[in-house]
Image (tube, rainbow, N blue to C red; front, side, top):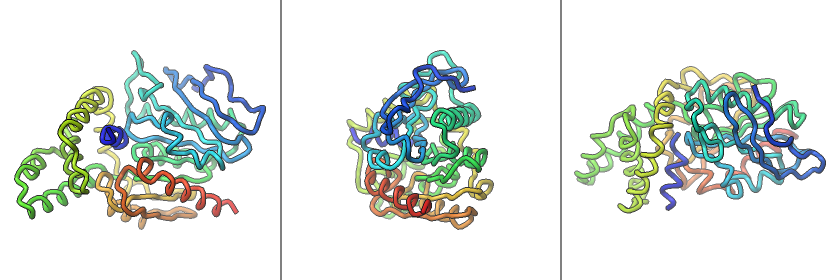
Length: 319
C-alpha cells in the first residue's frame, strides 16, 4: 500500500485544552489538544526541552505526520524539541461540524499554533521545517514572524502548482509519444490543468509514477482512487486555492535563513522550478540541497539522509 501513503504525502486565539507540556525534565514525550480558533487540534511533542524548538509542518493537505514521526523525525528529536501538528481536519484534529479548511483559515491556524508553542515552551524563536503543502504555511510564518523564526527548512516546496503541473504534463506526453504508448497519451490529454477533480490528479500521478519506473498495479490504483474520492470533498477546494500562489514571482525575499531540499526526480512540484526559485531567493543565509534517486516523497524515501542534512546545516549555522 505504499502508493496510498505516497498519495497522502503529495496532496500538496490559542487556549490549552489538555495539560501543559511537562517541563519538569529535559526529555519531553507527550501529546495533547490545543484550542485553535473554533477547533481542538492535536500536537505531538518529543525531544529535549533544553534544545531549540522545531515545528514540523506536514504535507497534503490533509496528510498528518505525527503517527509517522518515528520515521520522519526520530534523529532530529535527539537534537531538538520537535512538534508535529495534525492540521485542521487531519487525522486526530477531526473537523466535525467546524469550518472546513481554507487557505486563510489554515494560515491563521498556523499563526495560532506558532504563538502557542513559543509561549508554552518559553522560547524566543523556533525552527520551522515544512514539507510540500506545509511550505505554504512555512513561507507564510517566515513572512509574518521574521524575528521569531531561527531558520526555515523547505522540503519539496509548493511554488507554482500550475507551472509545475504543466511542466510535468509536457515531459510525460513527450516521453509516451516517443514510445507510442497511446493509452498513456490518451489519458494524459484528458487531464485538466488546473485540476478540476481528483481524477485529474490521480491520472497524472499514475503516469508520473510509471515514468519513474514504479508503475502502480491496477488493484492499488483502485485503492488510491478510493482514498482520493474520500479526500476530495474536504480538501479539493483548498487545493484549488493553491493555484493562486506564485512564490517565484511574489515570495522570494526573506529576513531569515532559508534552506531548500528537493529531490532531483521531483515532477510533482518541479525540480527545475525549485532551482529557479532558489536563484531568485534573497535571504541572510541560503542553501539548496539536491537529493538523488528520489522524487517528491523525501520524508518517506530519504528520511535518514534528510534528517542528517537538516541537523548538520542547522548545527553549522548556529556555531
